[in-house]
Image (cartoon, rainbow, N blue to C red; front, side, top):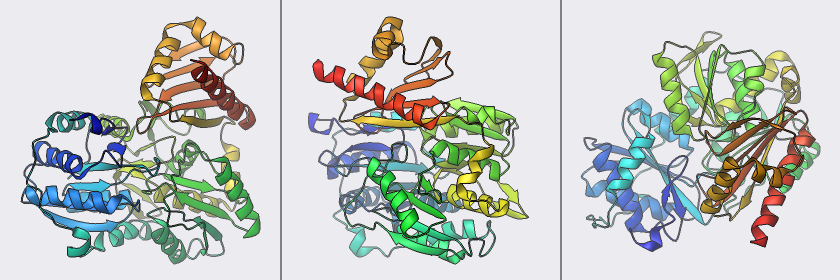
Length: 476
């Protein structure tokens, strides 16, 4: 690989990089390596994309690599990543999704699926090792002009939910859909309407908006509160770019934290075993609703691996979720006589519908679902354009020296009780507060998570710590 491709690498899920570095050659090389090393016997490959401006060009390059290997492309067009994954799992064929998920518009990426689900970390290593500059025989073939878009994938995805949730269960509810540039914007509005909701379309744009469900911008927070009042909403829904992470607002327009969304969805499904990264709220263990809870590094491949371990151990009703709200179903569930099949990849639609159904069944407002949970509050944010190497050096210094931690935090949180380096640096203090620092796996960003006994305190911790780090970095 040449220096101009240096930004292209696997992140927490899939290959990511600057659009300027994701040349046709580079995209073809990664797809070809996937086809050679991971799914060499396949005859058909599902191919889809999100709504980024750069995605059609990358789709064309991916299709060329697939055809060069003598394989057929099943082009499903622009659709949610979990819809593509569910279709591929059902058909038992591999898939390639062109998406940068929630990362900035000047970046994009490619996700890979085998016939049984997301590729694993060992697969990423094999693909990376196979990527060379040996030119493959690219076929100049534009699937956007020459392939018919298969609608079956979206139809199947919709049926997953219409078969499981009661007909017209949202009748009487007014729900806003913050559409922005989400690939699920039309699908979501149609699905909610089919369930009887009065849907209000909000914030649609042709320009790509990088919604990060773990670090909702102040402007989006203000928009949510404004829309809730203006349109008298019962709920406000949105997703990130490729719709594998939900953004759920209550009737006041306040966005719920993703790990709380995952926790409530698991409770609605009556899950028994939970798998979630170390960054998720400790309310999961404190609520006492689950017999087993396992913690992993951040990233869906780690969650999926641990879910499979749970199933191999004989555990049942296994689910996983991340702090971004993406929800994974490890095995099938039955509720009110209706079955929900497994989908071991991040999904945004299931937790949305589950929380709405949960509130409707209980006869409460969406905001009241959290009142029975342990009153723990989490917050997170990031410093953008913060080189990952700088993040790693900072975390290494803090991990090796209590003095360095003291210099950064002072007496802000108290004495350190535990230090967890599973993924970055996660500190628990005698004040029962938690601070977690880690480099993003998808972009040059330093992320900070905090947990405290009040929402205000958790947010203050994140702002103060990131502010101190930004000033420290600027002085070097």
